[in-house]
Image 1 (spheres, rainbow, N blue to C red):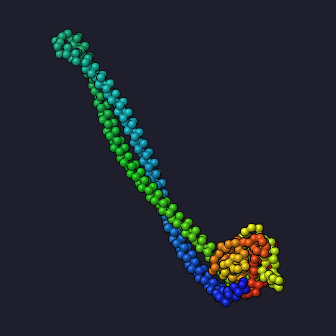
Image 2 (image 1 turned 90 degrees about the vertical axis):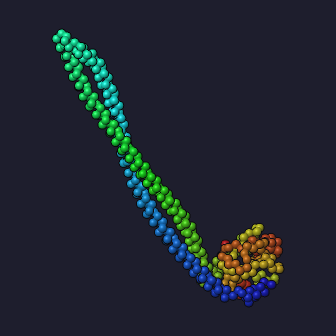
Image 3 (image 1 turned 90 degrees about the horizontal axis):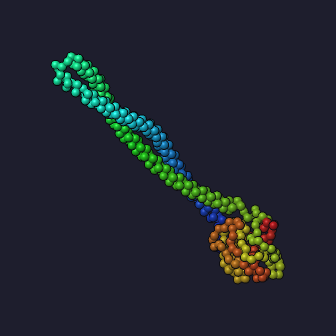
Length: 365
């Protein structure tokens, strides 16, 4: 039955033409993927240039922000000086107002004293000479004091007016400085908004770049895998690996290759401890995946150049007909092996339709 299956495979779709068509398909895939890689690199270059441009804008904005902050510090110092001068002027004004009040009080007291003397002088203009002379001396003395006080009062009043004007000027300067400070703060706020906007844009570009880089990495890995498959088809012939192929599963060999035996054994029988992984011994394509009377579930893999491997008594398979598999790729689990009355795997390796001794091809443990 197995021989018939191999004969059918030989006559059907599986032949050296498969390898040739697969090579061409792989070359086309590699070419298309390289084109995609080229586009991705171009997109990454554009994103990188845009990112650099935005970083340049960001640096310019940060320089402007530093300049504005320096201007703010200067303006705040100027405002602090103006406020200090305003406070000092108000303090001086308060002192002068107190002095003016004292002078005014003193003048009122002096006028109170001068007026009675002046009145008596007018009433007693024909009085004694001594009284007149005494009163006149007092009047002249008080008048002199009054004039001196008035001069000081005028000076104080003039100083108070100057201080009042200075306070007015300081207030105008303060208002102007506060307005300027508000304008500078507004400029700083606008620059900070621009900075945040740029940072958001840079963050978006960075995320997009990471995404593109990951995609590019995936594409490059795909190219490597495709190149590996292409190399496997064009240069890695299974015949070159004779004696070093991995075992299809872990277990003990209970049946050995003996095609002339009775009954003949065209492969090897491996006993396993439970349902263990079954792996492809080499790169290839699944050409059969179905149950076969007397052999349970069977998977046959074509490895190119007319070499096939067969895996029988599988409990389950994880591959589909037409699927390409890698070396050491898990293709199923071992199942019940009737002759062993245990779990195990029956394995064959064939060149064309002729079975070959698997143990000469498998690596020794």
